[in-house]
Length: 122
Image 1: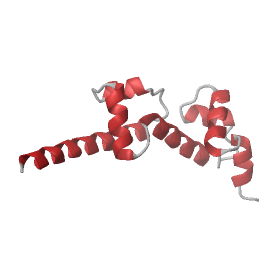
Image 2 (image 1 turned 120 degrees about the vertical axis):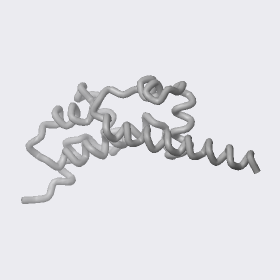
Image 3 (image 1 turned 90 degrees about the vertical axis):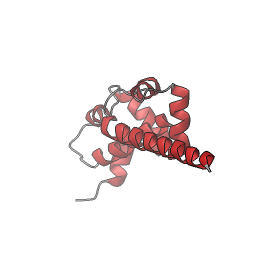
Image 4 (image 1 turned 90 degrees about the horizontal axis):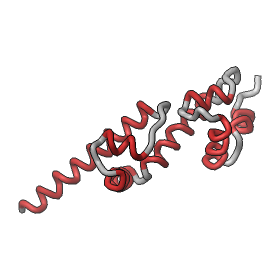
């Protein structure tokens, strides 16, 4: 009946929002993003934005942002000529020490140890 159609419309809206939010994070991860700025961008309260994002994507938005930043950092660490400070800045962490702390929490080793472990021998 009508109830089911309304629910579907709500699910479609949430799904679209979550997809848009993921795409936005992937396009803007280099910028300083916060839950407040993301939820404002999508005209929602931080609580509602976070709830819908996690419901659809399985991760809270800030956890997803960190994952996107770490995935890109790992890719950039494959370029040995790029200083760690530059990698940090490139993925949205102007403070290299904070970047290193987040990287260790995420990956279990420092960016330089990660780089050493993943560089192919000459």
